[in-house]
Length: 504
Ligand SMILES: Cc1cc2nc3c(=O)[nH]c(=O)nc-3n(C[C@H](O)[C@H](O)[C@H](O)COP(=O)(O)OP(=O)(O)OC[C@H]3O[C@@H](n4cnc5c(N)ncnc54)[C@H](O)[C@@H]3O)c2cc1C
Image (cartoon, rainbow, N blue to C red):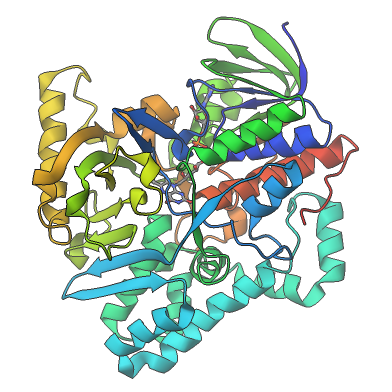
């Protein structure tokens, strides 16, 4: 066995790094192994020809200033606790939606402006709109007063229950409700219900009926409070700052170090083995890999296998990272956009185009006179598996799909195809390879009607093996995996007799 630490973390995604940073700050030693040369996984940045692209995430919650915001504004409070300065730029619009039949609406930070845009399109539904979005505010109000911690930590649960009995009860009841069913209580207009679906789909890649109300309360209410804030330097600034926090208090991150197995004896994890055959021991192991990769690859004992169909597997992505001539982006263009040309296909592979131009907020991400356009659509790996990644056929399949996406995007960015100076394309195979994620998937999803609390928490069936990241509660999204890292660290810290201080 090589060097040891109290806790080994497999993967430097935001879930894993958050857990490591909080444990290390509490004096529990951590060692993070990352397969890539850089941290962050789906929330990393990569550089090409003078551009710094966001690999995946680019809409960020959790950087609001209010210090008393319970389970929200976690990034602000974690960086404050770690003593790391972090600078963001406020984004006045979460997403500008461009939908069929000329329906376009920016989801503005200013709540009245956003609701006003919906009232203008659906005057007959004004009351329903108010009531539906009010339900989301209620979830937000509860979450912003409950302290963050582990739902598996009985001491934490008892303290929250005793100090906030009414709010805890109300949240427990709301956890049974879906966003779509709640919308249908108040809203009947089909186009408006479609809009509620795309609001859910924008981050959950599921329609509103399959999306828990509690998740919606976080994303669709907090955008009007904490708001959307973009890190200076791009998405990779978040993992970089977490690594700084880990190293500052003596923790270690080892890059180009792929874990190939978790060492388990008598039902208990006690270390990991790397691709080069070296072994490292620890009192606890946290896996930041997906549930399928953890139990069907890293844990070799077949008794712990997770059936592929136990969870819905979200699709993967096809992504375009474009460097473009700045003149193609109009002066009043918003940063984040979602484009649906046809409601029948919005949830099918390629049906919805997400795109962003982060250089509007941070021009330093591109050479002078250039902008970045980052566009992506859902995609299934099955369509790509037949290709050899180095073949001409693979290149032409990528180019052909990219051309259709660029041409569709021209409906709101005329001239885009002619303005492209650099084009980098990524398929589900790229996601599988760079993110080490089973089938390049966005992760496991709940089935319609499942309670959000049925999402796996941080403990696993193997003693001293924990999980953090988007396979665990509450799910996908940088702020959600940050919560999972906080709850994982707080559970382990209590077990080790060094409970975390509350994040202020
Ligand atoms: C295209 C796209 C767009 C997105 N947009 C947004 C957005 O705008 N806003 C938002 O909030 N969220 C967004 N998300 C979701 C968000 O990025 C993810 O949910 C989140 O970053 C996942 O974090 P994670 O902790 O689960 O780890 P991951 O990001 O999955 O990272 C895991 C890390 O672990 C490493 N690893 C895995 N296995 C091993 C191993 N065996 N050994 C060593 N290292 C290993 C991987 O290399 C990787 O670095 C987007 C995701 C994608 C793909």
